[in-house]
Image 1 (cartoon, rainbow, N blue to C red):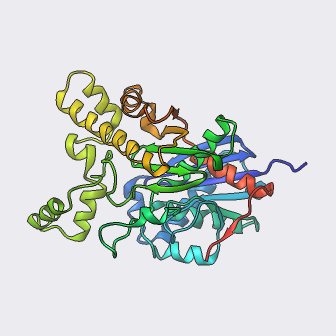
Image 2: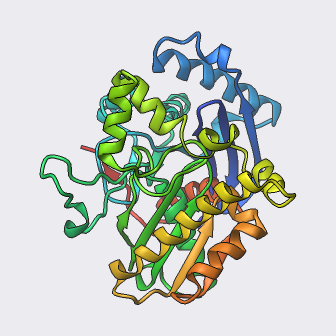
Image 3: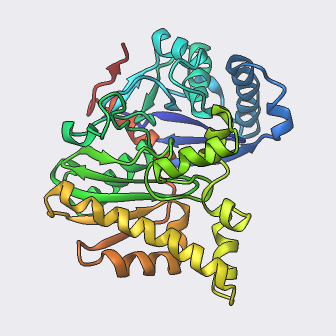
Length: 358
């Protein structure tokens, strides 16, 4: 019988680097390094920032008394590469070059593969990413928009979605590839997807202004109204992008992106906060309902996950809107780290084959 491997997880965010070590599927430790924005702003390119975060990571391993040479597999969060199907990918030079040059976009997750590779190379160990944010399994019909040069893109919380899908399959004692589910990841970003027998056939583009509004993003807007607003305010492309991705949603309406504070004020008599917060929940419920036809109405489960799923008020409101479709399940745990560990373990045990990025 194969021993359980030591699997090290690196998950970079905009101001944090989350780390975890698993022995098989058993968590040994999990920690989060918080980086000051001023510190990160000193780095002019992704390579130098990756070196800094690698140094921080090695410091955390030393603190945890973990010998780098004892780790069997390194798993990094997948970043902005070209569209790929779901699964686990060997980190190779083609991938690394595209991430370093930010060929497909700039995002902190790009450093996941870079850091994992740096650490793995020290002791000639394998390094992988799994289910990066650009997983694209959309059905052909879901790609079509009203303009042939602007097809829909699949950019979302794929790692969280795939892990939640597998979690539900385990809970229901079946195979993920036998289930039809609508899964909503509700955190700093919102992505709502139709999972059809193991494939995510429809999902909103959670990065570029599609779907419900979020704590910081505008979500879908009337195009001509947005166009006039940008024109009237003489916005550059960069300013328009910030409006959509950082300065919209709850923070635009209420001055904060903290859903806990917003809910507290909403439930303690602030009518303005309650109206906007209820509208936020309403858009999520409406988006969940809109995906039932993508599964021909045959939905085995609706799943809510992400930090906002911890709110009883939020869950109750979404349930009231969507319970007619299917039973609703709540996942309050963050499954990204354990999801990466599971992907690494499946490769180690031969249950899955790593794909080669080309």
